Length: 193
Image (cartoon, rainbow, N blue to C red; front, top):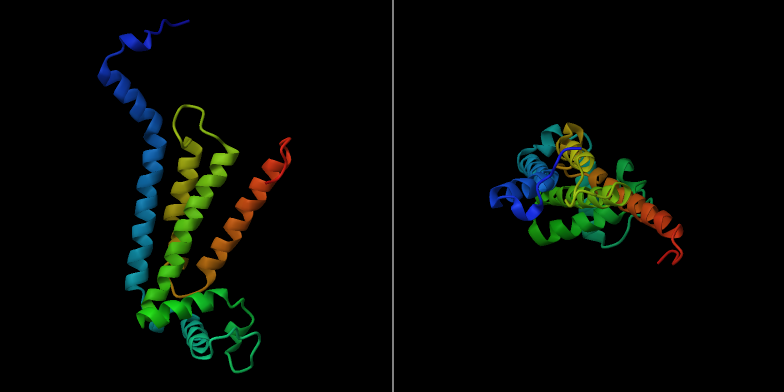
């Protein structure tokens, strides 16, 4: 067995390096989260929805219909078909954003915020599944998963557009987290809270 120097005999620089190495996965996770957020904001600002968005016109029509009628469309035949079969939650939130900002482009902020919530929920799930044991708050595997989630091109493209896909994915992620948390609590003597 190798001999280890007692902690009190280590230099301040050595203790600092060790503390930094323990926190390196956390620093990586924070850096890639900032990168992922900036990629999505840039995409939301520069994406030309009217020209390049596949269902952009239908989504915006649904938002404007919701803003004008102030109610859920519930399969109303006056709403375009690609919109009326979807849950109206995103359309209501988007109508609120449009009514406050008068900018269709600002609706993409809902998708960007949804991604940020998903990144946080993913971190919480990973913390439940693989708790850090080295004194840091994020494991290397969690940092890798958060990195993939932050820079995956398909995710960046979905989360910077005026469409309900990002917020729907966020609702799904929150549901998965709550189910995981409930499953973990069910195995404890205290039960589900």
